[in-house]
Length: 358
Image (tube, rainbow, N blue to C red):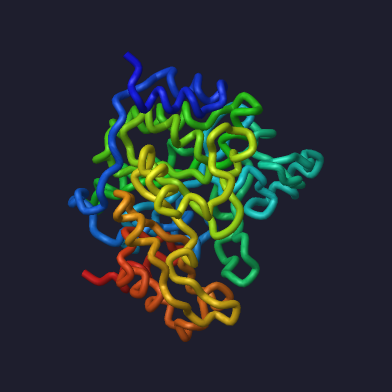
């Protein structure tokens, strides 16, 4: 007999996503109260794209360094190749993070991704073998470029292998926090992200809530569908402006992020997600001059709804760190910890680990 959750999914999801949602269901799990996961420290230190403040983002070197620094989780953003292999890149457009322009100048093109025209080079136009000829580089001009050209684009399998090996070496339970990037777009070109992601996790036994895994997305429909396919914890990403990229295409998806952080909105998210991953200003506002405002009630509101709260992104660079912290990056980590968040994404996980203390 169809469960109440499946009935809700059937009423809300687009048929293409519904087919994915019901194709290989496993028993679903209720969202966890943040306090009932005792195997992990709070707040979690989540290495944003690896130790991306020290090494080019989304490389094995960045992930491994984050582990050396004591991060609890590493975060690979996932996109697909032309031959449907999951690789770690922040975007499917890779002109700014690799040397692709020097090798495949003729592959430059313009596409519409989530309603936006984007010009560059896209992973789905390259086979894995072709992508492996490229080298990663630092995206931001004001960070060190000393390690440009040293690392290849890693596959998700390679990232999982790294986590397994480093967990054995360190004796620590290192977690992985993948993001499905542009899932509706990839599904529209017949390269769905979710199936290979779940298959890779299942091969390692990561299928239940106690697995050291979070799956995150800015979209809503794919998380609702994933809720019926896996027991691992799901995280609804929420920005400070705009709304979910699938709001127009999917029936029943909230049009704005603002509506998702109201009490009713949080209650709706709690039906399919374990946590919300929010832009940090939604918890601790900062004025345009960098001065800090009064904290919001979002952490308490989310906890009352049974949702954990993870904030993004803490960065030590002068251009990113609000002036209210007076140049002391660790104070930002400490402030969010005092505000009761359950996890923090940061480019400099060494700062987060030191600020959290033993």
